[in-house]
Amino acid sequence: MGSNQTAGHDPDEITMEEFYRLLHISKRRAAWILQAGLVPCEDRGSRTWRYRIPRQEALAFQKKFQAHPERYSPPPGS
Image (tube, rainbow, N blue to C red):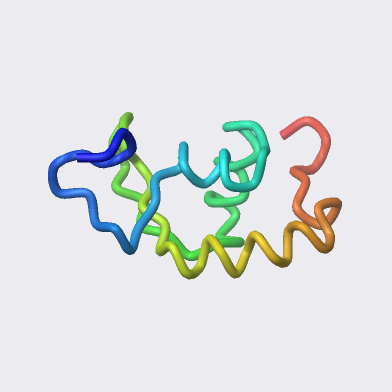
């Protein structure tokens, strides 16, 4: 198994950790993006491995984010 794979890890999905590393953003900003529904994902509600993001959705969002990162910032104080 690769270093980012666990038993049962779907290769068509990524975790929040992989998502924030893909975008080069903080965990907090990634969580805000996912919680705001800006990227479709499955919220499993657990403390670990909470979000599952379809890889294609993450890659599509990456293009939008790279073009206009200022559009995807949490409001001050959130």
